[in-house]
Amino acid sequence: MERAVNLKGFMNAAGIEIDEKSVKIHFASNQGSDPLLAFYEGRFKTWQEEQTQRNFSRPYVLGLIQLEDKASWLFAGIYKVLTVSVGAQIAWQYETELVPGQEDLIGRVVVRYAKSFRNSYPAFETCGESLRVVEFRKERASIASFPGYKNVLLKKQELDVVVSQNLESWRSALSSVSGVYVIVDRSSGKQYVGSAYGEGGIWSRWCQYSLSGHGNNKELRALLKRESSSYSQNFQFSILEVCDLSFSKDQVIARESHWKNALCSREHGLNSN
Image 1 (cartoon, helix red, strand yellow):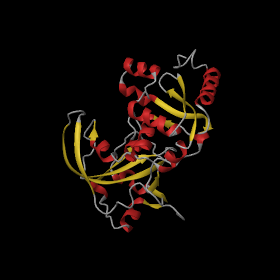
Image 2: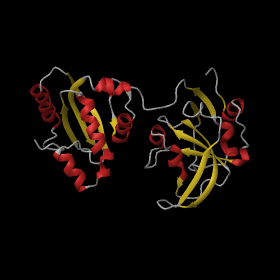
Image 3: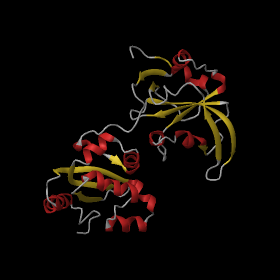
Image 4: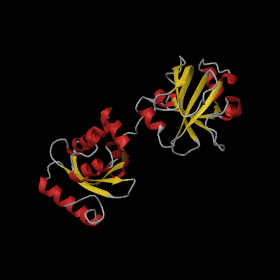
């Protein structure tokens, strides 16, 4: 965009009138549960409807999701509050519906606002005039396209999105190579070095991790049995070395052994052999 414009004016130009005195802003950030990941998975509305307090005291909620640079926010839609009740799993359960006419804006509009206060649910008139639209993306925000083998860094939750949505750029790249990867337990810092070879390459192997959490590895299976199956959400995946699919099993395993030695993942990590 050539210049930043006010979000309210931008919405009005798109045909969505905002009565600022009827709107609460929800600055959604990652405080133990990631709203951006929920958005990628198509469940932001459900995620937002579960609240620990009665935060939505006005007829409408404008959802903004914090992006990586902290002062940028992804527009997630304006929702009409229908009901609120005591929740079964959390204190307050809201029922909302998306206000019509914004489907082409959700996930495409990026707002700039350097939030300097703790309140995540201010009234619109408190800061709404300062919300500036700085980007209107060509496509709806999603897990980024495959970044190249050297730059792969996926949390387990992100891997689950890549696999469940069968994202083409990731599937194509990872299924065309074998190689050596590392899984880091972000809670303890311990590493597990593994390898993938044969048909389907790294993609096939990582799909197994997405489905089970442990990929049927003895060490990771034992870790999840000791902690809980949900503990796999602490795992982070990256690639140490890629090999051509023509490499034999023995050749790939030899490279795996090299990386286990280099990272001391037997002595201080999660590998047992």
